[in-house]
Image (cartoon, rainbow, N blue to C red; front, top):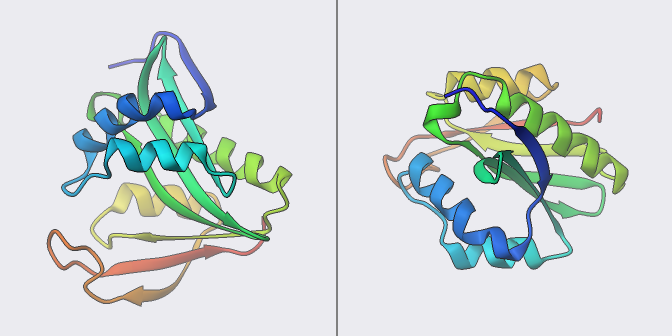
Length: 150
């Protein structure tokens, strides 16, 4: 589905229900609405939403600790994938956290998730290690990626 009126904004606690809907459509073990409410209310996080009109179609978020940020999740509703929404979201998130003094970012990604790995490589993330059996739904390892040159 092609977004008609694509826009981006920071997540607020009242967005938790809409973000939970995206989460459930994208992950086998989704975070709860309460988790997103807490994330949006925290000063140590940065979450950005993608909207098609008023509808939340994706999000990206991270935890911030001093000069480092850990990307927690990036999710786009399946009908909107393949249209560079995730690329735009991640680029905007990186710019936002740089303004908050972040100089390095990290994340974990499934080896089987080639589109996500390509997206992260596009933004300068490089493989730095593996977390064995990281994902609880199927025991898949996680590749640890870092970008230390923001």
